[in-house]
Length: 188
Ligand SMILES: Nc1nc2c(ncn2[C@@H]2O[C@H](COP(=O)(O)OP(=O)(O)OP(=O)(O)O)[C@@H](O)[C@H]2O)c(=O)[nH]1
Ligand SMILES: [Mg+2]
Image (cartoon, rainbow, N blue to C red; front, side):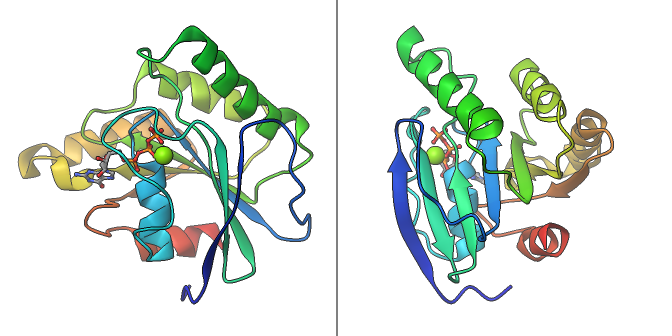
C-alpha cells in the first residue's frame, strides 16, 4: 500500500464520534508505551502524524487518522499502566469498552501490539481474551524487535506466537520500519 495522504481527523475523549461507516477501520491497541502511535507513524510513513512519547500513558483518547481517504487508523489509549490515577485508568477502560462493544463500529482488522523484547504480559493476555470474545480479525504485532538480542530472537518470537494462538504474528519494528509490507499484506 502506497501512502499518499494522511490526515488527523479527531481525538475522542468521550464516547461518540461520527465516522463514515463505509470507510474501514484498522484499530491499534496495546499496553501503554508499547509503540501504538509509533506504529501508526511508521505505517503511514509520517513521523509527525500521531504523537509519541517515552512517557507511558501519552495517548488518553481515541485518535482517528484517515489514510489515503480510504482507511481509518484508530489509535486507542494504552492499557496496563499502573502509575496513572485510578480515574484515568477507568476512563481509558470505558473508552476501550465503548469502542469495541457499543460504538457500532467494527474494525476490519485489530492490530494488537505487544513488546516482543519484554514479552506478552498478563494484561496482554487479558486483552486478547477480551477481543476474542467476538469473532474478530486480529493481527499480533511483535514490536520493538530491534531491541532483541540476536541470540534470543527465535525464543522471543516463539513466546509471542504461543501467546497469539491462532492469530497471525508479524515481527515488527516501528523504529526500524520492519514488518510494514507484511502487515499491509495481512491486513488488506
Ligand atoms: N527501540 C524501539 N523503540 C520503539 C519502537 N516503537 C516505539 N518505540 C519507543 O517506545 C516509546 C513509546 O512509543 P509510543 O508510540 O508513544 O507508544 P504508545 O503505545 O503509543 O504509548 P501510549 O500512547 O502511552 O499508550 C517511544 O519512546 C518510542 O520511541 C520500536 O520498534 N523500537
Ligand atoms: Mg500513543
